[in-house]
Amino acid sequence: MTKDRLSAAQARRIALAAQGFVDKRPTAAPTMAHLKRVLGRTGLIQMDSVNVAVRAHYLPLFSRLGPYDRQLLARAAWQPPGKPRFLAEYWAHEAALIPVDDWPLMRWRMDEFAGGRWKYTREVMARNAAMADDVVAVIDDLGPSMPRDIEAALGIVRGQGKAGSWWERGEVKHICEALFAAGQLSAVRDGNFSRFYDRTERFIGPDVAAIRIDRADAQRVLVARAAASLGVATPADIADYYRMSRADTQRAIDDAVEEGMVREVTVGGWDGPAYLAADARTPRAVSVSTILSPFDPLVFFRPRALRLFGFHYRIEIYTPAHKRVHGYYVHPYLLGDDIAARVDLKADRSAGVLRVPAAHLEPGRDRDLVAEHLATDLTTMARWLGLDGVAIGGAGDLAARLSRAIGT
Image (cartoon, rainbow, N blue to C red; front, top):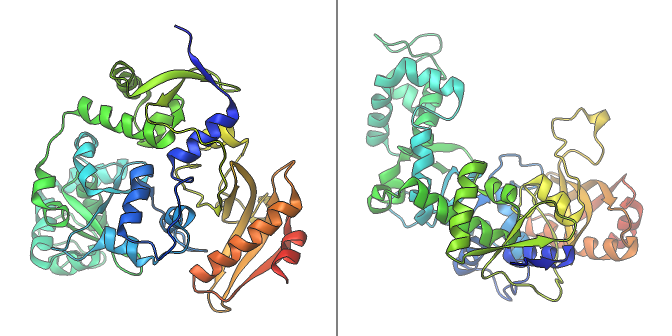
């Protein structure tokens, strides 16, 4: 059978539609229904604690909805115990927010992480496995707790373990992390992004917590979700979305092909097979302009960003300053169906301005067109963050033109 062939331009538009970038933006203040619509497209929101401009998990909603009340996301994810919540935190991609109803789809991973996700965490659990019950008992008594709260309740002080145990200060955190990875504890955040741990049954509800889904069945659902969120994708793209192995992913893809949920296609300029989601849309044009999170699902798999947009992207936070190419915490800029620029951003809250230390144009793009659109979107972002204006620095080949467009 001859496979359908898509052009690279069609693949870009399909990917953007799948991620919700062609959905109509709300004309009034976005609501919980809009948040749910976005999650229906993306399936997850990757989290990150860096707060140079704004924490990364707040940006995907801004990129798709425009300015919104960030408390909307906080209410969806971190309501106090006993109140309904829509999102829960887990290792779905990296640390990510997923719909609570998808929690059972991660049970197979929780089983794999039963002793902890990281080597050192597993070592701590092996030394203190029996003491994990004490952590859970404290949480049962106190409610959502930080590790230091649990240490205080257990009488643990620096350099001195609890009488009769091998515990040391800091190991409680690793115990909590192991229990979180195993699904026994869930995480809740406060306004400072501090992490508290609570019983999963109490956090997401006993009915959802009790659901068990066979590993193969769960992976088939996750692959179908990933394919729908990507629109058109390679096996590597699909595997990365929920961080599944290539072998497990391919088995689930084969099942999805048989069930008509995806079909194999070829894409101009792509190596190897690609898979098109059954409900994927191919818009004639994409008119969006928006600033993206470095961890937006559109670009968090860097090989896909390169393949879709010709956009070679690396985070340079951990690169020595003198070796950075584009800046400290750089955001891609989406214009139409193209990533046309990248901007280093910093919210200077004391001065009340959104600083742009560096702005770089992608090769071959229209400098005047990009600068005009980007100036508008930076101003919108600054207002959303409660800042009074935008200050353009001198680094990058777009900086001078962008400064004129901003009027500085």
